[in-house]
Length: 354
Image (cartoon, rainbow, N blue to C red):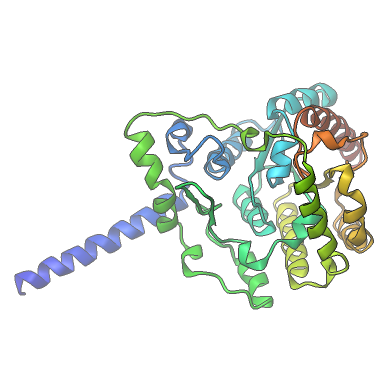
């Protein structure tokens, strides 16, 4: 064979082999199983997506090695991340109330969709956990085109959300039902992972620079000002009466129901939690509340779920929010305490009725 052809064939063979090897390695959950790498692979102090990759593997390992421990996993967007001061604080309060060792872990991130929640639920598998899903009404307006896509911000970083979990068969089924297309790269891990971690490997791992993930760093700020208040009111007014009529609404509820079913099939318990909104905007968010609650109650009853409504659990104040629903000090301190208290009550009740 001509030498040039041999070189070309060898190049093609090597390229394909590396692709397959990389995809297999990622399918075995590496490098995420190696917690020691997290400080080097984080793309920033608020890189929730990479942090959650490591945290998912820590939870799976803990479920295998300590059968006595009670795992509680909180799924949601930046609202659920900003509303809690620390996982350790909730774990301690629950351990005291339940008289057993409890590990509470947030798998939250900005721009979270119910497709992301479904991905995570299936990736966690049968870990014998209580999975809490934030069902704030605003989450059900997530556009179809933003369920899986890359999130880009003003910085040089590009975040492909949960790039390390390929689109699942469950998501494919729901998207097919609603004629939603899925980009080819969503079916694989390698190229998305290489793109997402390229900057980290070059600027942090090589230079041995470490970062520590900080959950609440991106929600600091001041209470909503008048200009922002006007903007939020206009947006909520525009959506009045349209909420339940959109395809996005149907898609999000379908993804939520599938996530619940998958969690329960893996012998995990599910609790839905409703988080508070800024009192300045309650009258605007109530416009679609009746229809929303009717559908949500059907799911709760038909699938035997726990439910925590914390919208009015305390006398929330406008100065505890920086916008519609993201909390700032002292809101997270008060929310953390009431969540732990109410969560311990519902868990004790669920244990009594096993």
